Structures are given as structure tokens and as C-alpha cells.
Length: 351
Ligand code: UD1
Image (cartoon, rainbow, N blue to C red; front, top):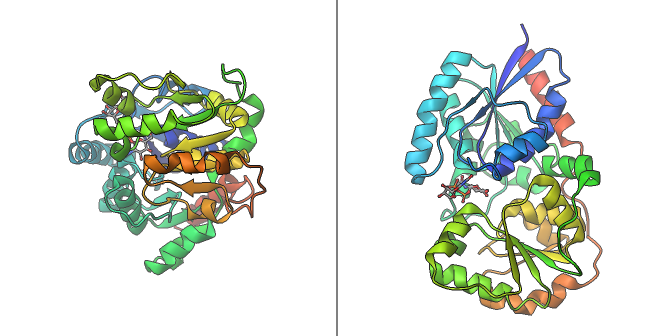
């Protein structure tokens, strides 16, 4: 009997991360992977399109749980995932990142005594006002295999008493960039531009905050390509206000389009931890609109500047456009997925 791994995904960035590992797992004869999609992200441009582009296996089931409050969403996922795990009896549950889908899967599996492997274990912002911080911390403490993208992430886990379960494998998002960058689709922008994304509740849910962020982006000396997340689109629709005309607001991009935009952009402005990393993989700087960094590694190599207030953005336009040479590559060598699969196999064989 092959070993059974159930992988739980739900939000867009998890599809990218899972695709890296699934591609390697697919060539393992004695491991069978089943994908469960929670439905956290449900719009075609946030999910379906990524499943196709990234050649992910078709999810065995989509639980259809998207929207609602954090408690309601996580609770509904917890109950549904528990039933799935009971029925499927996996040898291991594989989770990614820090979303509500990640935490729900970790809770359900741990109560059933099913070991959990957590990819992207260990990053910390130490700010509990971000649900992601709560999700990743709890998931790490429930996990059996903590697969860290960087040495700093591992050290964070060591400080929390988790040294024995933590191992640095590198970042699977780098695997994906290495694998797919030749398929990048150029954006419909002429001349130099900046790529920007915004979706954190603190930046977009409140109308005044959203407006301040978009007005600050409007001071950018270059035109700004802004693929809009559904949360941000909904918040903008509630405002009776027109964003600056230098912002080119477009629908969410597919993976190959994001790669193309990163390749062509002068630099990036974002409140997404993931996009800041991807910008770095393309040698581009990123201004991060968060109170504190999720990836201090990026600050250390000179790739990211945290800008905690949009009013401060204009001070950083020229820094972001400078030519620069990264001071290191903390995210590994683009072969994280192979290491992860080796570790999973050894664990399953010994379990
Ligand atoms: C979630 C993750 C965040 C991740 C982000 C990537 C948590 C706590 N947050 O935030 O860490 O960076 O995904 O995108 O899990 N919506 C749609 N269509 C969709 C998806 C969402 O309309 O396909 C709407 C939802 O109904 C909701 C809003 O957008 O009203 C936000 O979605 P939600 O999944 O709650 O959180 P994100 O902001 O996407």
C-alpha cells in the first residue's frame, strides 16, 4: 500500500507553494497525494486558474468554505476537514503557510493523531493583530515536521522550543520561480512601471486607510500596475471616490502574468509577504506596507524596506529605483521541494 498524504490548500498563495511539492510527489511511486481545497478562495481568478496553470492535481474535494468571519470560517473548515481525514485515513497531512485553511487543517489533524508537515514553518512578525501570525504560530506548535524556508525561521522555532522538529529546506516559492520564469507573460504596460498589490485588512478594509494607501501610490513617479484582490475591490466599491489616474487597476493576475509583471517592473510595492520574496527572486526591490516585516531576511540583504505608514512612501521612491546588488540569498537554491519530499518519505518509512 502506498503512503497516503492529504494536502490541504485554500488560498491563492498555497496553490503556488503546493504546486512545487506536488510536482515532485507525483514521481514518487510509493506515495499517493490527495488534494483537499477548503474553498477559502473561490473566484476563478483566485483559484481555478491557478490550479490549471500550475498543473496541480485536481482537488479530490472542494469544501466550498469561503467568506465569513475568521471564527466561522475556521470552524466550518475544522469540522469538514475532520470528516475528510476520518474517511481518508491519511498517514500525514501536509499544510502550507499561514492562512485560516492552514490552521483548520492542523487542528483537525492533530486531534485525530495524524502527523502534520508544515511547509513555510517559522516566520514570525510577533504581531498578533495579524491573523497570519496566530495561524502560523499555532500550526508550528502542532506540526511534527517543520520545514523552514530560511535559517532565521528555524531559529525562531528554536526559541519556541521546537528545535527537534525544525529543518531548513529552502523556499518553495523560489523553486516555482526557477521552474516557470521562462513562461512569464509580459504585462500590457508600455515603458517603466511599478507593480503594486494591497489586500491586508489593516490597509484596505477601512475606507480612509485604503484611500491613503492609493493616494500615496499616486505620488509614485512611475505608473502603477495594481492587480486588485477581491477584498480590496469590495472596499474600493464602498468608497465614493476615484483613485489617482496613474493607477492602472486590473483584475487579479494569473501566475505567469505575475511572473511577467515582476520581470518587467522597476520595483514592487506590496503588503504581501510572498510578493516581496518573489520580487527579490527577480532582483527587484520591494516597499512593504506593513507595520513590521514578515521576512526580515529581505531587509538584511537590502531588498525590502518596511514602510509602516503610506505617508512615508514618497521618501522611498528613489531608493526603490536604485541599482543594487543583493547581500546574499537566504532562501536556498530552488530545490526545496526535493528536500521536502525526501524528508516526508523518510518520516513515513520510519513512522
Ligand atoms: C487570505 C489569507 C492571507 C493571504 C491571502 C492571499 C487568512 C487569514 N488570510 O487573505 O494570509 O495573504 O489570503 O490572497 O487566511 N474573496 C472573493 N473571492 C475569492 C477569495 C476571497 O471574493 O476568491 C473575498 C472573500 O469573500 C472575503 C475577502 O475576499 O470577503 C477576503 O478573503 P479571505 O479569504 O477572508 O482573506 P484574504 O484577505 O484573501
